[in-house]
Image 1: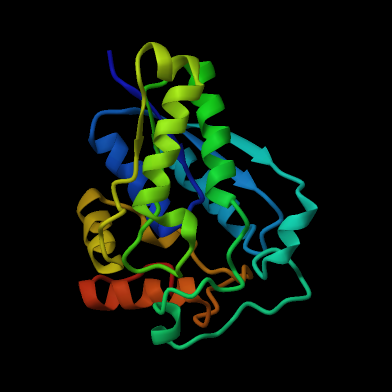
Image 2: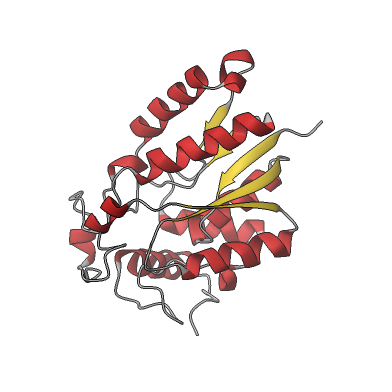
Length: 223
């Protein structure tokens, strides 16, 4: 029997590459997409389009946590920062950080995993080309995996894996991997600002653009 994986899936470059990676590894996948008031709700549509294309079962959850408005990614009154690359990579936590987002997402994924008796959770954090979020680090994911294995029926009876296959890859390497796996880049959405086309100014757009440029791969999402 195939092992089953729950893939945390935003519809962005990283999570889509993770989904294709998990399928390539032989996992039977189901996706989990979370709406939490993000300005780039456009990514949820991307997630649905990609999962539909693959014929993968999808799960959607909506969170209404008013305090997440402390993040410029959620609060309509705050501007998404337009920072130079050196500041993006400085390690300073930017205003786009959503408090405890990956901790919450992994908890929801763990509950879904436990109910379905799945074998793994797959997520797409990256600690090389990223914006300094503390919940995108190897140390955090190691601790989260231990908690999930100690706090779920599936964990204590059989053990589960919390996989972050992109953790140690640069954005350039992620693009190369996605290209190799056949990721439909034109369907993915990374921009923090939402809208009809990527803004080109947010952290995510800049890191994505550099990754494609250095990989020598065309980004089909940019018209």
